[in-house]
Amino acid sequence: MVKFDHIIANPEILGGKPCIKNTRISVDFILELLASGASIPQIATNYPNLSPEAIKEAILYASHFMQNDIIIETRKVA
Image 1 (tube, rainbow, N blue to C red):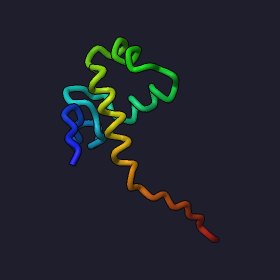
Image 2 (cartoon, rainbow, N blue to C red):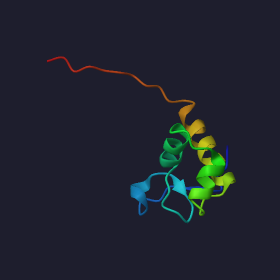
Image 3 (cartoon, one colour):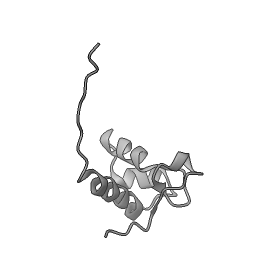
Image 4 (tube, one colour):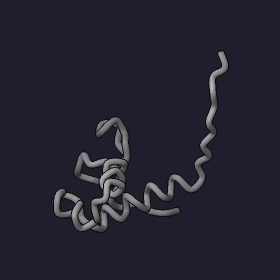
């Protein structure tokens, strides 16, 4: 089992979204920053509470939990 030292999911913080410990910065927000073209060093500079290691762990966390997901598209027939 993979251990994530920087990630927490607490129902009292951001409704339980996985985020970086001691911040309110969610894993999905970090992924959005990366998808928009920001680099890990840029994110760490713009968000001083985030270490490069925490950012990398957020990516690993997202990857880990996407490995076994099955997405099924459905359509409601009227």
